Amino acid sequence: AQRVTQPEKLLSVFKGAPVELKCNYSYSGSPELFWYVQYSRQRLQLLLRHISRESIKGFTADLNKGETSFHLKKPFAQEEDSAMYYCALVGQGFKTIFGAGTRLFVKA
Amino acid sequence: SAVISQKPSRDICQRGTSLTIQCQVDSQVTMMFWYRQQPGQSLTLIATANQGSEATYESGFVIDKFPISRPNLTFSTLTVSNMSPEDSSIYLCSASDGSYEQYFGPGTRLTVT
Figure 1 (cartoon, chains in turn red, brown):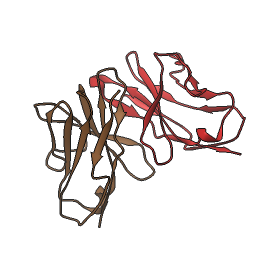
Figure 2: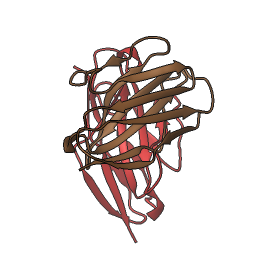
Figure 3: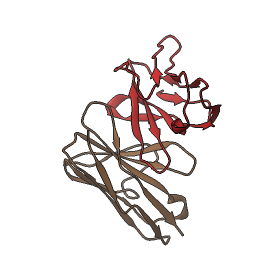
Figure 4: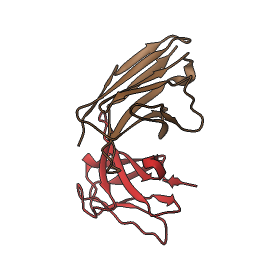
């Protein structure tokens, strides 16, 4: 079965602290994995995708096929990072499966 | 990239009525999708809107309740039929140009009383 699991509904960190949002997936083929972000009063938008291997707004995510994980990391959190983050997997038929989401709250 | 607009942005409807949500993309796209996002929950795919043919519905969603049209490569509509309070949700349209990445509309917040 295709599934995306984000175990934390809420993650609260202080400004300047490292942050890691966890994502685990279940998929029988080679996954296309993404992180989407939704800032307050804005639409859902792509943050990064695993295939690009780039850093966006200081965030990185590494695909670990052995652990079936795609955790999102940032070494120093900023207040403007406060948002809802969704891990997503594109499966068969181009259908995207979203995790439950993690709300990140960065405290001053 | 693609910019997506949705109309209406929000509506309050009485039970038993129907609402049609429009989704417009500023460029031709391969795929269009409709999602539902209930309060405090993640996105649930309702269906894939296929251009020129019937939509492909996910388990738990049926055409009679959520009829979808996609007359061309830039436009789609979702109708929520015979509404009940359980249909109160945010309905999202998204599009993909075949690169797996999706672009999302701002959503339609529906409240059924």
